[in-house]
Length: 359
Image (cartoon, rainbow, N blue to C red):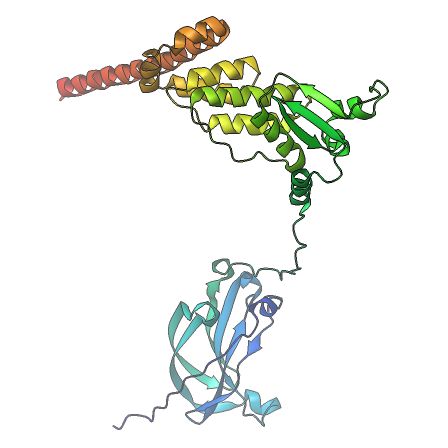
């Protein structure tokens, strides 16, 4: 007996906008173009939010035996005679994501009437698809302010300067308005009711010239210049020269920047000196970092081998107390961990012996 005639065709349905498709309600669909195969017309029918009430949240996909392009009405529901046996594969791909294959299904079905459908009520869950990203409005960002750079040039050129500071035999020119805007202390000195008649010259005897230069740089640009510390002692001098005016002129940001700079130089040979500075000028962040560094067992032995601990004891006895407490706390925590591990090992051995005895 000869085999019945067999035709095949590939029908592609493209969903142009997934975002728009997801707006369709349950039971609403999109249809592909017609394709003629085996003497009949076919469409793919896509329900983005399910066809039936119980399939909400799933995508339904079917093959539909449709009316001819010119047909409709009663003809659409007319019988086609003998059943049309069809084997078809439904596939879904994300062509926008590099032709990513999603899912597929193979179906063998018999179509007896025009309008019959066959496929999957729950072809794929919408949970597998990320929600579409909302459109992003991009605006041209305004250029970054060059205020700090402009003020830095004003400090360098000394144009319009109306105040002179003598530090270590060197003269530095500055602008009263800038200093007053940065510090309430300078504002009171220059423009307050207790200001002196002639305040165009100030002698500072407790700072080094390089440190005062760094102070002015900070007040104009809100940053510290690049400064190389060739020795631990030089770093300590720089720190004190900046931390003293930071407190005197109520410059909290300067104190924070100085702390950060000192924190980057904490080491075995410097930690005790940094700790003494942190204790003297109440630099909590720097102190915490120093104590944490000392708490390490390897670091503690290396630090105790230096002579700096004696200097710290003379200059800041309270800091030595903090060092001892930190080391003891670290040792105690480590001992507790060892004790817990020992108890666990003993209990495990006892359980093992009991198990062997009962065996």
